[in-house]
Amino acid sequence: MKITWTTTASLIIKSEGCTLAFDPFMEMPLENAIDEPGRPELAELYRKADRVYISHGHFDHIYHFRNIYKGTGTTIYGTAEPMKTLERDGLDPGQLKLIAPGYRETFGPFEIEAYQARHCKFDLPIVIKTLLNKRTLTHLKRIREISALRKLYEEKGEMLFYELRAEGKRIQIMGSMGMDPDTEYPVGADLLIMALQGRSDQDEYAMRFVERLRPKKIMLYHIDDSFPPMSGEIDTLGFEINTKKQGITSIRPEKGKEYEI
Image 1 (spheres, rainbow, N blue to C red):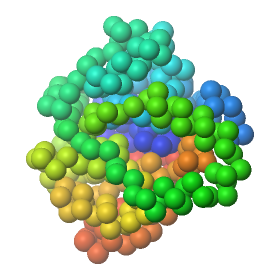
Image 2 (cartoon, rainbow, N blue to C red):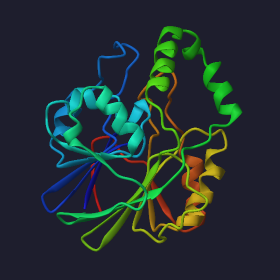
Image 3 (cartoon, rainbow, N blue to C red):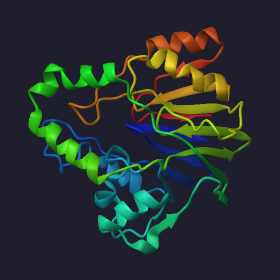
């Protein structure tokens, strides 16, 4: 399998001529208008996907679907809340496929399974740090715009954790740094792709999921400054040190670089 991280929680995963996209997004640079996507060349890349899967319905996961997939007929899989949002955004209901935890399907070389997950619980120190950041205070108009988007693109507890199996390998995908306490997840995947954001204590907080899933290797994402001023570049060194102590290699991928597993 070949994996490319493009931005935020956006992934392109390929195997034997089949391409899957997860949470395609195109960034929101401060110098652009809120509706003017950053790196628009990503739209063409995302349109080449045979299927699209959604982890949850927040704006930084599905906002640009209207730019990418409207009128294409590309099949998009997700839970009820993002499906409702995408239909509101003008996508054809015929291309929207409702799934839920327990979904399991084979497509080409891929076996795809979805589990219940949970969104990261932001802690107060990270909220205060973000709101009092100088860049935040000097871009209040953008803050109001993003706040409006957060209300329009809700999660409502609908969060999926994916496992892909192909070519004798297993990949797990966490679209946010959270897991459902009552769900039994398979352990020992060849690669865990994990969001690392939303906590002031991220380096220690994330280890509870690593210890629970026990992956052989970790790829970090959702670590970039893709919707400033609410986002920022994440320092991953502390987490990488923590996982190394457990004998697990963590990598901070380069945007647009294809990795093979």
